[in-house]
Image (cartoon, rainbow, N blue to C red; front, side):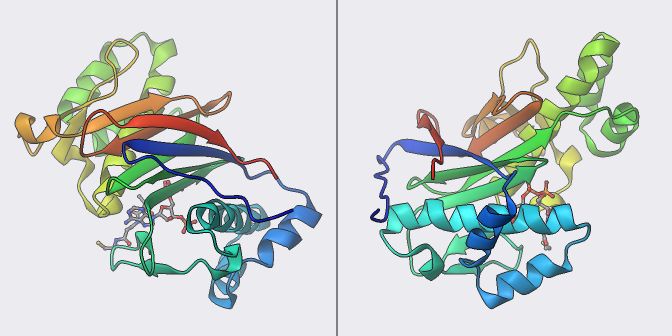
Length: 236
Ligand SMILES: CC(C)(COP(=O)(O)OP(=O)(O)OC[C@H]1O[C@@H](n2cnc3c(N)ncnc32)[C@H](O)[C@@H]1OP(=O)(O)O)[C@@H](O)C(=O)NCCC(=O)NCCS
């Protein structure tokens, strides 16, 4: 079978959902695609599940990106900014990756910087403490107004919206999460409300929330409006 290839429209975001639950045979095959440096990094991860998650995620990222570049997956080269955000060395579409549990997301666009985040929704008895510690005051208030049974799901939606934004700007969690505010589900569609109090700046961003698989929530952030999000599944 030849190398698959995908075409990416100018105004599109391809949103790939990948399963990271891989057999030993599949993992061995994906590991072959990694550079020695990536494999050394994988080996640092403990427990083993985290190591396998990185191998699957990086191997599948290589397979997905190779389809845009029409090259062998092992020849995809990354460069990493000081902030640790990876880019394609030598040009190509912008992308961002997130993984949680058995699910990985890869967002790819020609438009520009993009951020994506996925979280497995899980019991988090400390979610209100976490919100008070990391979220903007408006988000904490909106969260505490929700019925207790709806709060955990909303917490993960807020978390993924916030992470998608800090990943889009490339700064990651080094950017204080309390400095900007996102809308709070279930009533408010995903959007950025202000950045350091600046509402006009926030309006230049678009945000999307979704459920990529049962028990997972995800979010995407990009500093423009009107891009078409095309869901993609990686079939081998
Ligand atoms: C980036 C960050 C928000 C990811 O959080 P997370 O929920 O644990 O992980 P996710 O699964 O969502 O994302 C991980 C992926 O994001 C990407 N990534 C790494 N750093 C990133 C950054 N600064 N911005 C955007 N994406 C980044 C990588 O592709 C990474 O995948 P990999 O681990 O397979 O290489 C978090 O790790 C962070 O803030 N890192 C610190 C950034 C840093 O080192 N800053 C240096 C000083 S400014």
